Every structure is written in structure tokens, then in C-alpha cells.
Length: 274
Image 1 (cartoon, rainbow, N blue to C red):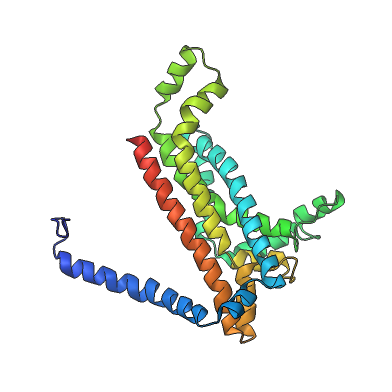
Image 2 (image 1 turned 120 degrees about the vertical axis):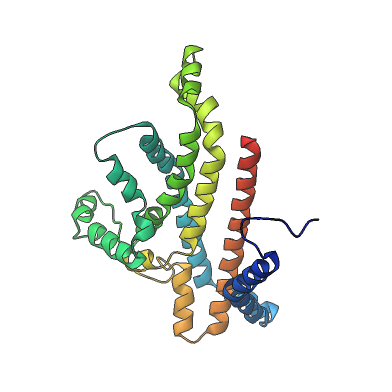
């Protein structure tokens, strides 16, 4: 195995050392400390901390809402990317910029804005309340907030792939007698599937750790609208450091597994393109 390669930046040894130091100090060391703290608990105590009724309710809400929000983004994110790539219309640049707004907007601001709009006396909340739909301070509100912060991941992952698809391929399929649905299913969808799965996984991982945009619209009711990150903060405020660390370790394992999945999907995408 060759460890030393020539590149644009000289000093492989120094660069590698700085990289390892930087990653180790900012990423590996804090996460390792958390894992060590969690492992200091006995197996029975650790299991009790991570599997009590309140924690299980928070897991269900966090993972369930993140999954639903990511699935919604996987569908409509592809649609938004398709419109931005294939059509030219007035205001396209504005729409393209709005897609990135959840990246730039402070999550607390997003949570306040969503709560203002979807509360019972909000602009949309009033209309939804007339048909018996309540968004703010319900699991539906949590799902909406997680959908809001996840949409850019799908759009920005799928958009470059759509831009690389030659429209002549679609025209050739149409000339050969394929319908629009057949063209999408057999030509376009196989090309964007790896990118869509990657965007879905990224949105799902981001939603699992979301706090600011959810804490306002959820209402933070234990056993009903309390997400896992909020439960961790609550335990820290109650000086239950062991419980907070144990639950955080569970979320760390979930996030690491998702990132591993993303890397596998990206590798699969590169092989598919080759």
C-alpha cells in the first residue's frame, strides 16, 4: 500500500498529522468521552436508562417523524429538483435560493415561524382547525418541522444528477414509442435512484438530531410530543448526566449507522455511473 503520494499540497506527513489531530480533537475525543461515560454504567443500569417508557416514546416520535419527513422529501424533493433543472420560468432563481433557506436560517427562527403560521390562531392553523386538523403542539407539527429542514438535502443531491442526464436520451425513448411514465421509470429513475437514496439518508440523519425548529412547534409534552434531543437536554438540566449520556449514545449509534449507509450509497452510485 502506498502511503505517500504526490499532490498539489506538499508535506504529506505534516498534512496527515494535522488532519488526524484536527479530527481527533474536535470529533473523536468528545464522542469517545461520551461513549466511555455511557459504558461506565452497568449493563442493567444502562438498559434501564435507554429503555424506560419516556425514552421509548421519544425514540418513536423522533425516528417516526424523521422517517415520514424524509420520505415526503424524497418524493417532493425530486419533483422540485426536476422543475429547477428542466424548466425556465420567472422567479426560478428565487425558488432555487429558497431551497437553501433551511440551511441558512437559524433553526429556532424556523421553529418560531412554523409555530406562528400553524398555531390555532395562525394564518394556516385557523383554516386547518376548521376541518379538525391541529398541527402545532402535535406529532404532525414535529413531522412538518423535520420535513422543512430536510428538503435541501434531497434537492441538492438529486439536482446535479438530473443536470447530467442528456435530454436526447428521453427524446430517443419517446421516438421508440415509450410513454412519459415508461421513460421516467426505465431511463430517469434508475439514474437518480442512488442520489435520491443518499438525499433521503442525509435528510433522515439531519432530522434525528434536529432540536431548534422542533422545540417550539412540538409543545414538549412528555410521552406525546417530546423528541429525543429535548429529552437529553431535560436530563442534563435535571443533573441526570448518566441518563443523558446513555440516550445520547443511542442517538450516536443511529447517526453513525446512517452516515455509514450514506457512504455505501455514494459508493454504489459511483459504481452505477461507471
